[in-house]
Image 1 (cartoon, rainbow, N blue to C red):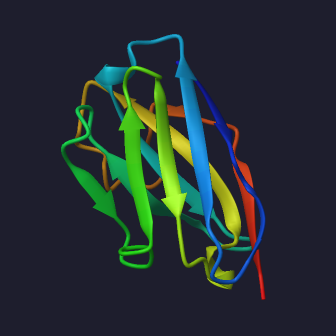
Image 2: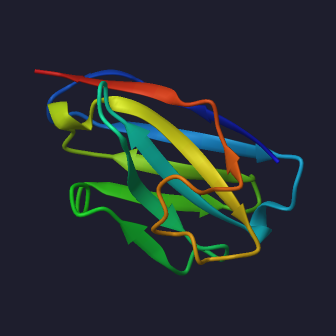
Length: 124
């Protein structure tokens, strides 16, 4: 499956952005989807993930209450709504997909597929 992330950009502290990740080449509803980010000079970190049906979500503590992950299986797209952005949210955001499993919702580095990444910069 191919993943195309979009929606990144420059935003001020406290602002909002919505990332999208469009999937193609597979049956979208069979994939658990997630977002991983990597800040400059730091290791990758999990942001959020959503189960195949959308019924279960997981959030890193650092984004809980500010970010919302959702999916539209009819549009083959997963979203990450980011509100109340902070400078520490600055990172490249990657979407991920895992086939036929919900066991990697808290995994950082092991995923079946990765998107190309979209840069989010939060300026103060």
